[in-house]
Image (tube, rainbow, N blue to C red; front, top):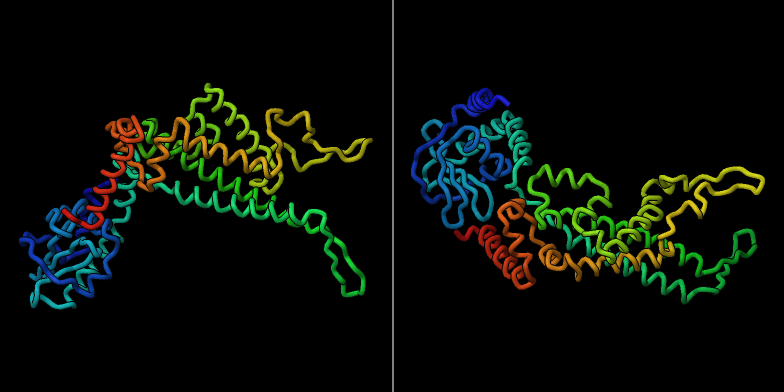
Length: 370
């Protein structure tokens, strides 16, 4: 990345717009200023790349950049209600502001390679937040599990009941109501299991951050791309008998239930094949080839196992970390580096105090209460 060359091109793109050393003053929001690109692109272009003069924090204002266009000064500001261009009464009209917006949009288009470079560079460090969707993913898992429960109860209640249906040709068809309902329950069980693995994949990455084993964006990116079983072992000690029990059963369930469906019902171990023999068509995946440690592979038992493990995560050795994830706060890689997560994980009381502090700080920044 040739920063000097890109800086020159961006400077040419926004001419005659230039930096101003005018002192900050309160102004009114303009209509034309609502058409600026994202606030961070404006900041990266003018402050980071072109090194324009700017002001720091004011009440309800995160930053302010005075710019000059043919002798007219306007202020580009990121305020509580969003990015905008602000002018003092009578200082200039909307046509000037519209031209400023047009020039900035042009500069942003030219500077796109710089923004991409900034983002790539940030992944090598720890000044990153990692989005925490654990609550939403767990709620999806629970919702699907509850639908499965309801459908299974209905299937049991209707078991043995014969449904008759008159056909157009005058005939009558007979079917078992319970069979169709049990099939629908199986479908919901598969969706539930998929939701469970999605939640745990997400949680394992955040647990690795909280435990201090992921400290940079590259660490997180690498772990996110690893297999589910590797993520499991990254955050849980499988030398513990109870953990090992869950690991064995969940790996088997993932292999024999979830992975088969995820690969178009073909699976990875020949589950879709039957070979020809004197005895007829025989499954390639013979019973003695399967993982003997697997629990009963029924939909009901698979959902039960998923629920048991989710309870274990929330009550076992990761319970304090789950309190943080269930707060909805994003994890910060800087917290893994500076040790603040290690301190917060010492006890449930410490974690709740830490969460309260983080929520206070984030509310203040959201409201720009500086």
